[in-house]
Length: 256
Image 1: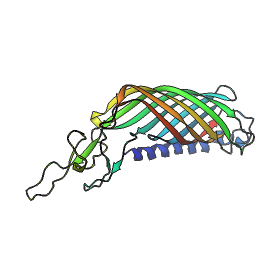
Image 2: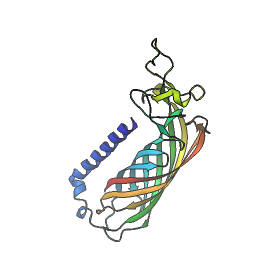
Image 3: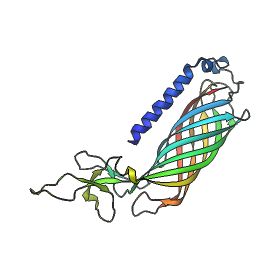
Image 4: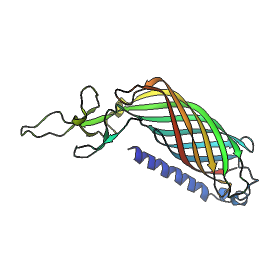
């Protein structure tokens, strides 16, 4: 389910970017983006990234304050896995792999405001510009109970009946009794929200051949804090602080 949503968002962002490129006002912006001395006041971008705990996508809208400094706001969506998660092949008919011991499937939604500064500006259009940025803002963690398929009874001939879909319970099941993962919709109504806060520091390497485009590789570190600790895996400590390292591909455009 997450992969499907991820692909849809990526396609939407790409379509929006292509529409912006079709706009004559953007296409004819000051020598079509070949002049390094032109300052575009506005920009918008998308970022697809992977970090040490999951995958995500981000939308950012920025505005220049000076030639080398810009402010921005952003929102991003990310899956959050536990470091000890290991997927096991299911033996149920649908063969869905599952994570034994997982009690919640967690997704993060972050909003933030930040500042970006240029460390090393481009000497020409073929060069790379290095920037650093930092942001802070609220975070919401959505914890959906993890449902699994288990066999609980046998039919009259001694064979196993269709598996039941139940919430994982580390006190009741052994690894052999779980035969597959439930569907994503199982447990949606039981989703709990954990409010928190996040802070990020990024380094980006911008290499677009035109100044009115954004193409960059961005890496950095994120810190998320939750006053009420997040439970993800059974028999493991719940987490208040979550530190992750990320790297992602950035694409977007600039205009006046």
